[in-house]
Image (tube, rainbow, N blue to C red; front, side):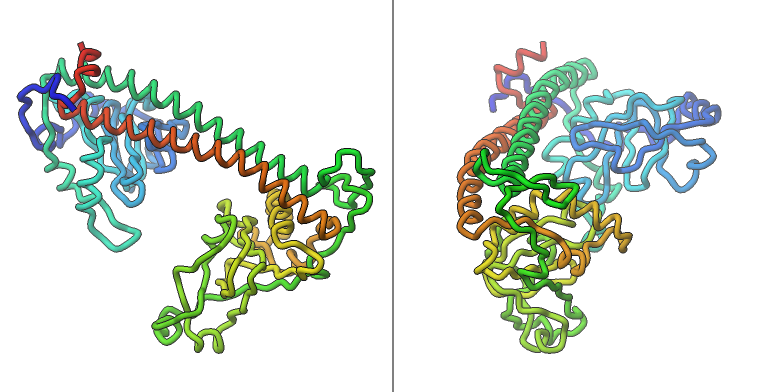
Length: 433
């Protein structure tokens, strides 16, 4: 980058640029506000977005929560929210007052600091990376200390330049964000098309003229006349695993047998393991030997993992949050079953919710009773080949689009970093004027 707009801006610590006490206007607003905006962490975006739709009575939230006012800048302090960029300039508060999660640092700009410029400083790559390096606390609960934020040194141009930089970044990041939004909509459409392609092929086959009959499954409708409907238990073995006690080192130390947790069901194929158990764990714990060609299914949780499926390509064992279906390979092609489970994802989640289990868990019994329409084995293989060919085209478009999104986000981060440190390229620096 060129130093097109670089001024000899003074370096100042934020503690000398932000207010520590409330102004008279803020005290008055706080005293008069019967209702206030409420801001949980999930209402704060990673690009400065805010959802201020939650409104609370002030006497319900005036203790035990973080107080902020119109024009303040908030920064998430806890991992991974801080690293992901959660933070915002506060605008549009009910009665000018807000309370929110205690996992926020609040910065109130003083007279030498323009609020939108301050927000962009806290959104910059340097601020986030240095803050991440300075986190303290136990794994999973690390936080950015207040002293890091208050001692962070920024280059502080005159207010007029801060305003010009913020206006420039509003325009340019807005343009980039619009492009990212458009590309992310393309990704959604590609995912919908991929899902529809799979569903059509594994429920209707490849012959559009094939005679149809009722499947007997209300959610599915008609299937080709010559297909048969089988319960999973009639063509496969179903079970799940466990997690050996971490307190017993002899179950883990020196282990060589692959052990899988539920994250693997987010893959298409499971080709390797990153955790291993010992022979003792296999003999003393409820750990099945899951054969290659089995289909793994996530069975717990409220996120997308429950109902997700993947094909296992090697001998392994699994934890209690995964079920396995080992199909009779002379009757069912593993990848056909996997693709059918992708098509039936919404149905599988809905019946597990209706079953009323803990957090809507999918049980092995439910999986065993699941009815799957099956074409002859040769037709299953043809369907799998067709789907792999057509989804390969869609996946190539998805990867290209994801690369574009990544580049746009990198450009956004680079612009912010350059602008708040006076290091804009000459082509960009002219836009400040």
